[in-house]
Length: 316
Image (cartoon, rainbow, N blue to C red; front, side, top):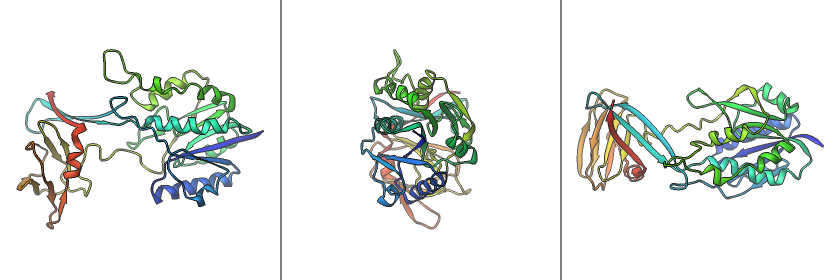
């Protein structure tokens, strides 16, 4: 029986991500590891040929409301009304099950292979000396991990690195249930498991596991910098839209201390370089802004996608 099969989960839709994937494959091969690559999107043949196994499954089960939703929110002082706060909220589809789906799809294949351990690794983690040593000689039958997020905080548990002994993985594989993942709390619209990590934490609690002694780091930031900012063009300022029966936007974080010319339909207003909550007309045919050289940037598409966003007031 061979010792450890590396299962690299990936979704490499850019050249940058493919290069990171290739670099990590090279490092793992230098340490004499067999690799299974699993992806929801096609991977170039030249990359496939660098590994022993490749699992391609085009299903990428993103769970949309009302089946499952993910909520981002940001509370801040009201820019115009002392003693009040405004709350920015975004409701988005949930991508968490896509990770477990990759475990399931690859798991059905690898359990038939002759390996003692399976190591699930997100393609872009920083493979330190400590990680490489643990992969060569696993110190426990189930190793979980912590990860450093985009704010440089530690997050537990992590889905980007784990080492699992074959029989332990067989038990784990039988535990993944979509119907559990999407369960809703009684008398609520919110999920029992707010995030994929919350679901993973419950699954881990059924096993005797150890936490790897390093915090895992990513090479590519998977933060969500544009969640509360629909100015996708530059850093002159940020803007957050709400498309609704009472449409509005919040502008803030101006780079320079001078106003921005902002177009709403056929009208141009001056956005002063301070945080402003602005009510919009119900019908928007054109919306955007001019930079200081007179170049126009249309934000109509971003506005039209903001019907899942709200700006609400509340007492501070």
